[in-house]
Image (tube, rainbow, N blue to C red; front, side, top):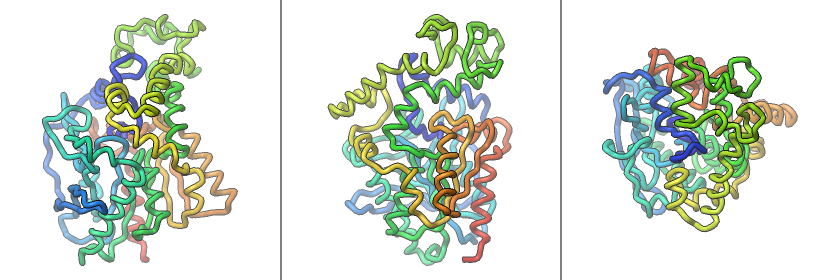
Length: 398
């Protein structure tokens, strides 16, 4: 999610926009604390290496359900609440749980290893992180942790016959297929929201070349649809443009953004602005400089990057899976390109495989426009499709 922050960079410079500011701008109105109409149970789950994490199962008030949606987080120090606080308070996972449970589907979330909720902590995650335990957060370890929690859930007599949908969100779209392929636990379907097609190295390179941020910039500045920003568009006094200019490019004139001096702001310019960050990141990874990564990128470790860089990408892994796979992706996703959805669709077609269903939503972002729920109390088309698909699976006879 934008709220899961799959490698959208938290830096203090113009090179990478300030996500905290952007979140506040996206979520321009919001409720206070809400009450939710579902029952929840929290439990400590013991993992394979003896580590313990907290998980929460949210269930319909009726107590009757035959399907559990198990969400696998996006990147970073995520906890079972996915709480966001500041000028506005909201809880993404409670909102999802409320909707799933209202439709008769249970919903499970968990604290990532080394992470606990800290409502008085630092944004965006409001988590307390045990650095030594968090060092073990890598893709394979996360897959193993998910398997352990599902195994524990299936030991409950009320859950052992339930269908389990793995809902991979952002980085979770990499972890969920790993769990399915390993076959340590039985999984009935994969939901891949904000689909990561390539290896993480390539995803990061695509982002730092400026492609992702340019998608977002074009959304608010590009009035003539030519996918580049003129001085006139950049300096517009339209209130929305002015607000985004102040948030994305604080105290920065058009000339400073037009790095190649071609009279437009383009992906090339954004890439030039971010090149120093990209080089610094790769250097920090090679030197195991976790402090630099935390201070200049986000709260991750060199272990995490190195493990991801060695993984097989989804573009080949998914082709070996036989369970139903559903991809939900927006055309304005600025974390991972929508073109990759078209590529995996074609790969399945060439391989004559029929277990992949893809949904691409116009003008939807990485969060599938979750902000529509916050501002209008209406679910976006993309998120409605996720809820509807879960109900369809729940209603399907095994």
